[in-house]
Image (cartoon, rainbow, N blue to C red; front, side, top):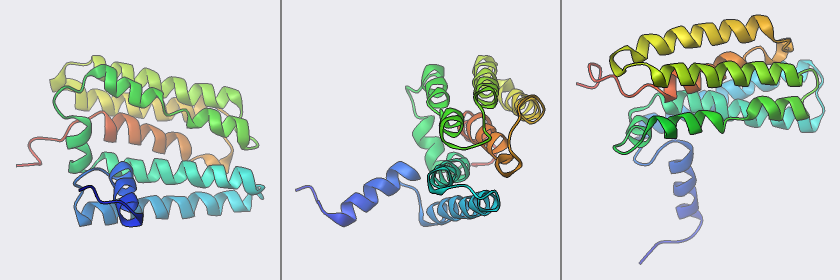
Length: 188
């Protein structure tokens, strides 16, 4: 018999936000990272006197990106995203659905469409380069792509100071934490 109710819903949500079979320590560090990043981002946004809707968007995006950066680095998430049968197409699609730059452009004052296009473009381009690299070079290529993407986003896009965290955290979450499989030397 399948269990239903509030506790089952909480467990399902936790498995979606962190990963199925995440251990207690992983869950704690993931939620702590998400909460700390959200508090930091919202504090910066409050100083800019954002209205309720933009402030809410910043909070949701921060929770997703700061939390997702930590989540994607866990062993349980690596098992989930790099399980047998997962291809470069799956990983590229995961990066592509991260359209938060456009949500910010639409709903947060000062974050324009050009900035959204630059951030999204360098992140997607970086993912393509990482996924095209031979497996034995994927890690250094990912770090090179991330460094270049962060530099490009920081210098080519006009991003409000209170959102300066956004592009670096997005790039780290997707190019470094998500695209790279578990380091076999560290898991032994």
